[in-house]
Image 1 (spheres, rainbow, N blue to C red):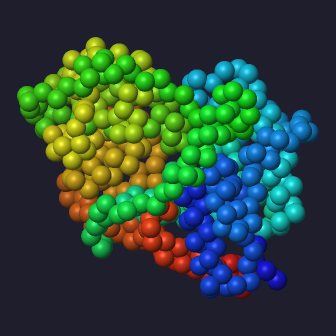
Image 2: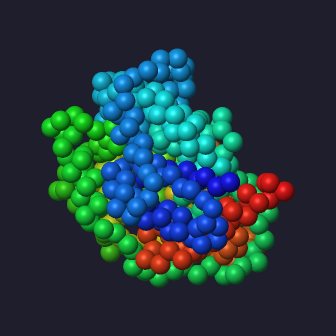
Image 3: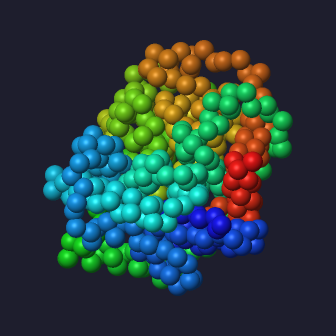
Length: 426
């Protein structure tokens, strides 16, 4: 019998990555059949043009007539949690998202029942298509894996989830710092095809006139801080603060699943600043670092705080510069925390992440705990960070990224899943 594999794929670079997994699998075991469920049109187009079996999951749901009315509203709320967190969403858009979730449940049930997969590989574990498929697959015989990009241009494939849901999170407390020493990869060329990107952009653009767009494809609408005001806020003074009393605050991506699902204190961007300022000693300063791709895109309340509070500097510098002029990094769960940890910073996390149990990563859940960790440094006999992070990457991640030109490492991914199936059938 053929092994059947269903995948969930968002964009065209991921489609190329999953095609490489399919090809690698067929080299190891030709008796396999793949079905790729595409979310964005670029992924569907890539699969079609490369002769792969694919279905446009989001569009099939969008074009379907509504049937499902029996699913509990609380279940629907959980399914749409990621998308409904958009601060710019209107009530009518939220209602459309609710209806779309119900239709996607119907479509996914039909697809899974007909295809009857042995294996599912899902991109992420939070957006609506992933949430719906997780719920549908729970009633099937399929073994589910979760894919996500990892730190230092690596790839995660895990049976329980990604980010703070991954299976090895708590085990990292006992991870030995045996190396190999972490080697941060240099800039490798990334694959992209602007023609496919243009397809997605055109589909979103036409929806402004026609309204024809699956609600889960609707982009977040983040208002930008006016350019002139932003430039005035970014202070790049030559006055050097005492790095021993300067903290780096690494902000989250506003629309990131980590900030929505793994932020137990429910800190907004402004709330994060207020939390930190209420916990640090009065003679400390804070360098606030936005995510580089989201500069000017945080809330008006965030920029108002930056403007009002004298002990805050909004950074316009590079990450290495910010790390060099500070001694502690505080974040909810940003990967900047790992970069700072590798550079010798004390790192304090206010939320949940895959790395928060590593020896030397410090959790805080109240301003008082934060202040205590700052004023009372822990034992510095912790393992060498680069040896610990090297062991983390070597043991739990694949050495490659889905946008790499060379996707030869996908053979290892296919082999891992095939071997797990063999173990389960013994």
